[in-house]
Length: 117
Image (cartoon, rainbow, N blue to C red; front, top):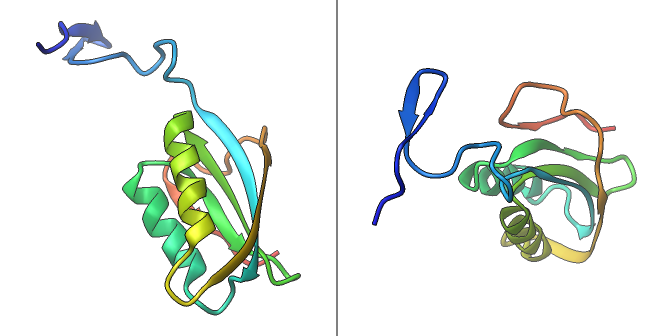
């Protein structure tokens, strides 16, 4: 049975409100090492993150690793981290290190590919 409609900002919506308990964003920083540059890894991460409606960014690092920040529901972020562990077809992922991320994302929503740093 569908959830009752709730009014927010003059509009009626189905389902939980964005600021409902359990819907808060979980934000992590991941460093992915292995053969992850020159194999389409950033494009893979961008595609997978957008498919999951995550916010954040991905970029190459000068040390040969890839760094990404993911923000969204914890279960979805965890699923994204699993996808990063597999990587695209020609990548070889040796390790994915994860730590909490607290920085404010540098843009309003969406997922971006940032320049190498």
